[in-house]
Amino acid sequence: AAPAPAAAKAKEEIPAGVDAKKWKVAVKEGGKKGVELAGCADMGGLEFFTTQIESAEGDLALLQAAMDAANKDVDPADEEAKGGSGMVGKMLLSSGDKQLALLCYVPAEKRDKVKASEWMAAVVASCHGEVVRGDGASASGRVVSDGKTRFSLKDKDTCQAASVNWLKERGLFPQAQDEDDDWVPPEDSGVEW
Image 1 (cartoon, rainbow, N blue to C red):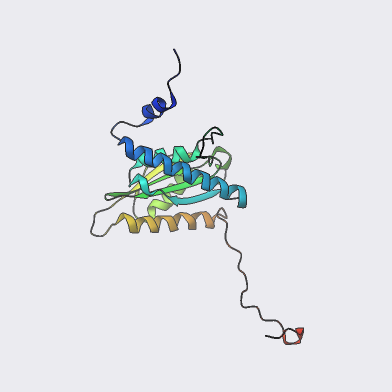
Image 2 (image 1 turned 180 degrees about the vertical axis):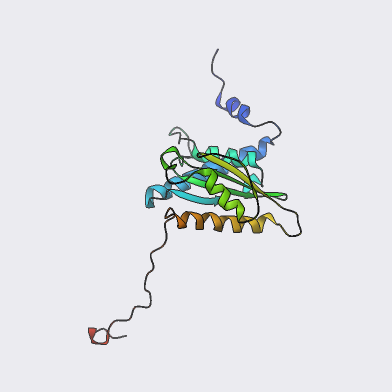
């Protein structure tokens, strides 16, 4: 039998109960984020990153679709590059009405530095969330909103900051070099202002 066309293969990958249009949008956003992250990694040695996926709307299945799209190998035959960031460890966050969804991925060659489950546990703890599942390679978590004291948009910002800080504490997130913009030359240097 002949292999199924690409469109039919993509259709089969949509998990049961997931809206096909939302899945397609999440895949598209994930693919674009992947290209951006791959570019950052190539330019500045970025190994780990934390970013948001708006289209997943707090849904872990849609967030997984975005992660898969970000990590897939770039197809040189495609008109528009998508994916390519499988070498970057990443934490994706997405807020919806009911929860903040978080998904973490660590490539095999970086697991001696970071375990996805540890990264996830530290981040969800900042908002009293829970780890849904996790191991060294990937982990998922959520912070449930109650609309009174817990709001996913606020929790998203808190978790994003917690993720970046956790990476910085381990020396895994590039930090800007302090530049002394207020430098004043010594009086005897011959420089006048």
